[in-house]
Length: 298
Image (cartoon, rainbow, N blue to C red):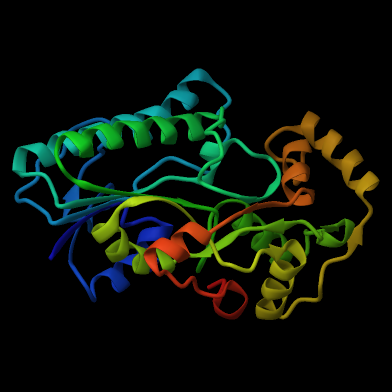
């Protein structure tokens, strides 16, 4: 079967594409010269040459906090309008049998909580969360109208080689000796091994549905620090008390982007935020990969 993969040249795509190629004939859409279709779907409708059996739509805007209205709009251009342009292109060559969309747990709008399920209200208010929620809603309507099986996965923190975002920042900080553990790093986070996306695609292409996806074991920040330190040959970072970190975060709020920590980062580090994968395990028969056993930072 032929699979159309958007966002295949990014962090997720680099890890997932070789695994998908074992099951599908993979054709890519993205901004890189090596993509089969080099096109910015946020700004134009791709001119596809044929129909595809399955679509994996992973292209998206994430991992930044917008400071201006123009930066905020980019999230909607990429995550929502890009999805609409992709669907318009698919209509011209024949709609796929199944469409798998990479969304995010950010749609729930939770800063903390434990074992949050798919039944939780979609209260996310950031441009990232809102644009992903609107894309989900658009796809639900579009797939229903065109009789396409829709699978939506909401990943948590994704682990894999050279990860972006907060996990990447942790690795960089530990490598440079500029990372501090806070209050024993006891907060827990849901983490997903990036290669698990590849195992989920054929399951979702058959059944569809909306699922949180993460490892069944909820790692503490200390777990993640130990994994990174062991692979880098570094000692575990020093742990500082919460009150000291709070003072540093307040100072960081004033310093802006260059600050190693601010109040938002402190909240994410010290509050547990975990999601339930029970629905995906039960309904799809999916078995998540152990992050503790499998995470390699490079």
